[in-house]
Length: 339
Image (cartoon, rainbow, N blue to C red; front, top):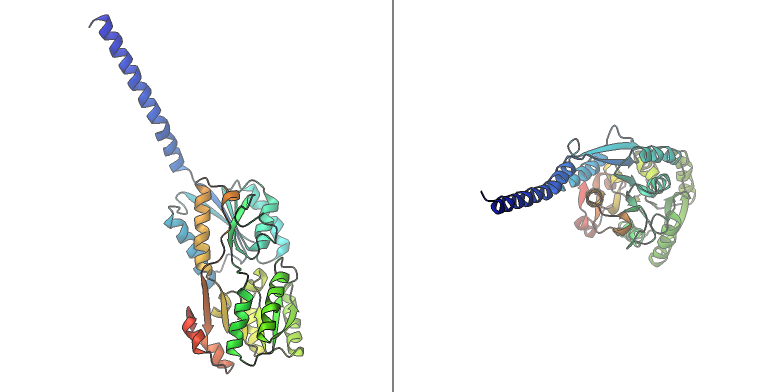
């Protein structure tokens, strides 16, 4: 081989080696990325065990949503689950623990949980689910551009309370007095009450505000409803109410008070009627937000989604025990009938 040919051969060999090295870099990086296990924190309201059929349905929807996007617990994700058990005083402790766990994203349930997570960390992305007024509660700057480390999905449409009252009026055409169970500690309830009173005036219904901050207030609340001669009850969405839904349903049954609930999980426990966001679909969509953040999206740039899928549940057995006939229009609209 001549000296010129040898030099040509060496140049080609060096070029080939450089090309292989360049190709190896992204391949190695991809292999490392594929092997990474992401850590997701999940701040639940309810105690984690035992699960009711309704909470299990919601949890399964969330994990199924993750699997549909390639995230499998025990394979490429770890989910650290903690519960604040509907006790606001436990929130700082649970949120602080989440902040210490070196998580890639925190899923926080309800406005209270999301606000606690936001206070505990400004760097870990937070996906808030089951929130009612993300802007008014201070979670985000705007729905379109949250602007911080929190984004997520709202469960409250502005006219939801009005629609719930309309349905109660269909069931009880002569309805003139209705109680509303609300929690003054909830950041959104005052605004919901204002919207509800506007709709009530149009329907010719007088609303009686009845407070319950803790479960110990329930008995007194129902006594106040009886004194106020309430003919029906509307229970606003609240984590503490949902956690103690069996107690509320039992008290409503004892008082023989037709009750509309903002979350359909009450109906499975014996409540009369529930109209609100489809929580299984809500949590499945929440998995999409988690997926996008794990793939590099910034929560500040992910718009907060408004509810688009609602469900109506009617418990026909409870209606029968109250001597009520549910209008055919509502029966045809119902997503599920419980008999």
